[in-house]
Image 1 (cartoon, rainbow, N blue to C red):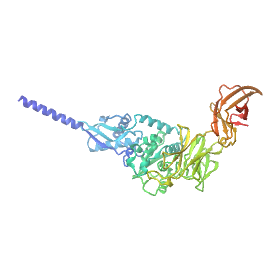
Image 2 (cartoon, helix red, strand yellow):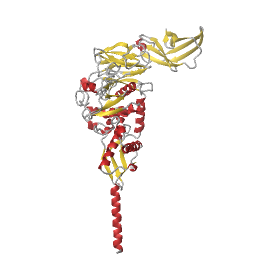
Image 3 (cartoon, rainbow, N blue to C red):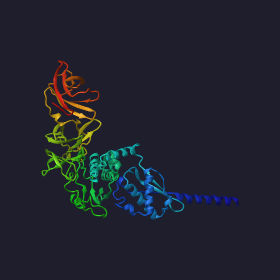
Image 4 (cartoon, helix red, strand yellow):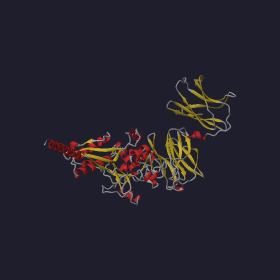
Length: 548
């Protein structure tokens, strides 16, 4: 009898344990996440958060906070979400919306689970996180977002902010090569996420749209996403009206550093349908129509294929003429106005396969010259234009056959590590066709021609000034120094000697500090030939920016 009772007790204990384990068993599911390649996942439409009931809103808030903290088990037991199909389906919808609404959750994976308690309610939610990302992925992402947002400031209106972020993203991100070549299986998972677009500079439409959504929201501009059967892009709100923005289609493939279209920036339904007669922009749902055409004509960015540039309180941009091969440099204080022409015609041979670069008050672009491209540098201060160098260029197909030779071109980018302007092939993106030292000095210095040596000019700097020295082919081989001679009321009050490199013909720039100089009212620059101790050339300084 005792044995039977003992066996009965053991059996009851096992049954109870089994019931508890069944109640606590975790159920797994897959979320349709944009950052994992989905185009059909749920997300919150404009104004959608206000349509949630109190329980859904509380669940949304708990899940978002838990994912931000990368919790592997998020406690939602207090919400009383039913474990039945209705509760589980609602949980899946809200879970998916949270991730798709927040591109900063780039590390959340599609697989997730939930655990039910014995009372039939969902107790915990278990997201999974990407463990293949670098250990400092979050720090890299935060830094990339900060760098992007540095393009905007409090003095900008929302159009200016949206434009700055649009152009920054298009310049710093390229459409993934493998996906463009029809080999998506070779692309890394990150190309679908804001991380891929902002940190790695490599994305497809989901990555562009998620990154732009994040940046707009951080800048205080309401935005959303739209999807079609094969594409994703953005909506943004200005002055109560909604507009389409498609950064992906404004960034041509193969990537050309320095090319940014504005065809798909702040446009209406009608303009979008006119530009794309295919199926890529047939959105999956009915939303309020975008009818405003306010930004489609008469603005500085309309029709421009280069990024716009903000410098010294004004905008600079390249405007294309009635002849599509002609383009000119313009300046405007207001994006809604065309402004004034600085250089009437930069070139007669524009081709959208060739990019441009704005850098420290200069525009760099290229023009054709036989089997070369000439790299030009144009000053935004005075419009002067000078040749920087020559880039050997012959149209070449990509090695994998994805792009024929006629898709080749030359993009321009700045390499901060070397301080050089680099020319990059479109079809051979790892090939640097040429690298040129950054020239942030007056363009007129490049135009100084001499057989021996000449002082090209003087440039004021924050902590001193720089002197340009032009060396000719026949310059003396002996060492030469730059002497500064200081006078006060006609009397000599000081000397300063600075060594010159004189390694080759061309321009040499020497930086000089103003600290420790004597009190003077006149200054003379002299390049002295040490072999003969006679002046090779000399110039009087008129002010901190001119010589005579």
